[in-house]
Length: 383
Image (cartoon, rainbow, N blue to C red; front, side):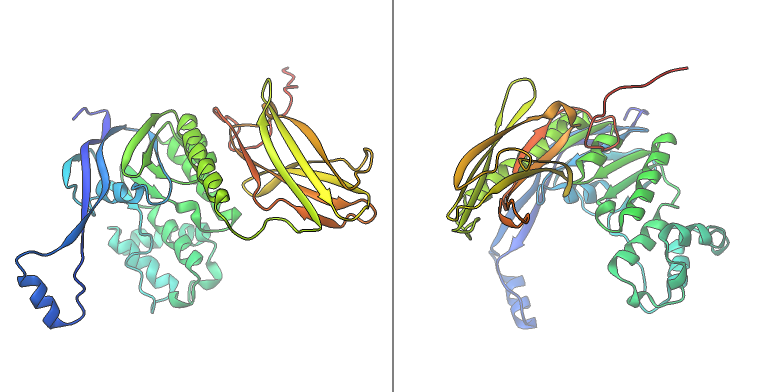
């Protein structure tokens, strides 16, 4: 293997055998064991996967739930063996997959730090030196003498992550480490990722956060139903992921379910692509009551409203009609955005109806602004 390559994956497939016989007693276990033909179902989790990761690369693995990402990480870390193909690892590898493995729920947080450190190969003296930094990073100083069973799941993962990042290794496998913790802890994780990039550490990063993939990764691959379908620049892979999720949302919205809007007041929103990066937002409204109303729309990213517009200063709306707003999408960085709409009573701002299934649009391309939604006007001055 080339010395510049940290991990080489060649034609790897993984098949799991799912037995059909149900074993509930010792007798049934013995009978099933001696059967000449035992029925089972084959589940192919990965199919002929090939890629390599260069040393010093921040490499992303992206895919929807159930696509095979976690199976691939467990193969890379040696937890599973491939059914076919080979995996070569050049250097010491530390997986951040099952954080907290080895924790004892009956011991205190302090005792678990030294226990987990020993499992990572650190001496008690080394752990004593790192102890204050570990506690500060995890933000658990007040809880260190409590038993671990009294910790929340988020607290335990924060403690485990804070210990694990002290491990001395050449390659790190990070699997959804940002899925837990508050905003402050996630920012600490981001800062840690920045340090890893500065140190030219090799990192395999699995995440559903496309902002993080765009921000940190040098390259990425997309896994779909066990197949490696795309590999390339992080912005391209992020666009594929967002398009797949948008299509899934559209298919789910077509299924019959609870009526979206009330009978007295009806509102719907449709999006169309206009000229020159314009999103045409078409709103259709109707009300049984003849009262003055206005429309409002919100542009959301990651559940946060980043821009809002309404017709409150225009001519009041009555009974039924259609309104169109032309949204300049060139002001947005790459990512997925949602349009939410509401119909309001003009006299007291009472919400009469809103769209539950928000319309979506994707802005493609790279994002050099660390995940920010809007592009501000370039008004720099240089002295």
